[in-house]
Amino acid sequence: MVSNPRLTGRRILITRTSGRASFLASELESEGASVISIPTIEIVPPESYAALDDALAHLDGFEWIVFTSAHAVEVFGQRRKPEIAPGNMAAIGPATARAIEQQGLQVSLLPPLYVAESLAKALAPRVSGAKVLLIRAAEARDVLPSALLRAGAHLTIAEAYRNRTPSESIPRLVDLFTSPESYPDAITFTSASTARNLAAMLETAGLTLPPKIVLASIGPITSQAMRDLDMEPTVEAAEATIPALALVIAEYFAVSSRIP
Image 1: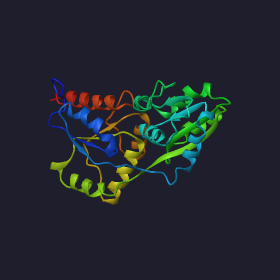
Image 2: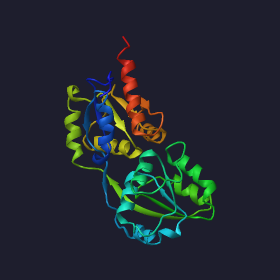
Image 3: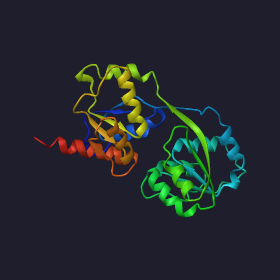
Image 4: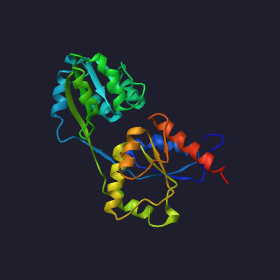
């Protein structure tokens, strides 16, 4: 724990998948927070791995392999044939890059901003006429593939996983928001899907978000999704990373605690 924890006594709700919540939880707990993990996303296999397996069987034919999440990298590592060497590898952000490196592979490109728009801009000058494999979730924005196609890439998209709403989280949300005594001080949103799914789950349960809860967004794409749902972000991370999200929450409460 840090020497002067800024989140002591604060209850923070984490909405990301249970398998991905631990890093954010540890960052917040190091600042003294009490963490509540209620996932609004569950990662499950795609309807079929056929497209991915076919692409991986011809992996050496792609000049670029592009990943937009660490989980896509993990599925890639589980299903690829190690004897087939991949081409250049592009990652949307540091967590995805670390997942690639953990496979014993090198990252060729990391964009300056960790969002699809920045990744598309960084890739565009490099992919004209190139065969590009994009490995991603079944449900994803079209920003990146559209940009790659406009840049002249020969694009193959392969689904590595699907996101779905975990129904077992709904009764936990009901318990959390039944009385003001159990309300969290803040809710974290690490993707547009976490915001959309939380809104849908609250609607299913007949609940609305109580006022004065801090809504913390990991970045501009997530923030826009929140605004589309009438959930104005209280704070937004300076960069789309978990440490930056934890930092902006800690800084917010450190300042608010000093306001008379």
